Length: 63
Image (cartoon, rainbow, N blue to C red; front, side, top):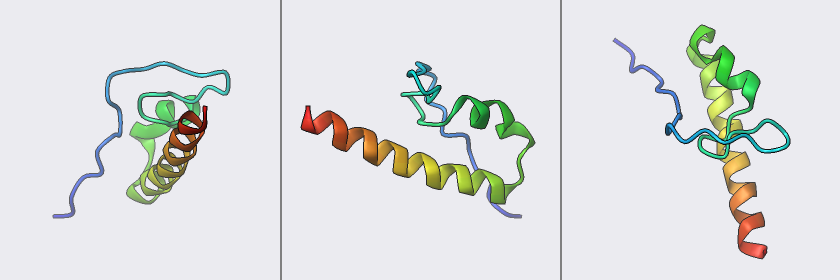
């Protein structure tokens, strides 16, 4: 049995001006469709999440 890809939700929802959650770094659309995606779709989102989080943390550190 393959492992289940868990949601990156950290139960700390706060959307920025671009509708990106600053808790899990998913877009509002990604959050709402998560439950209907296959593992490939979820993995693509997780890759986007990792890049968004990296970009956000770099931006915060520069401020």
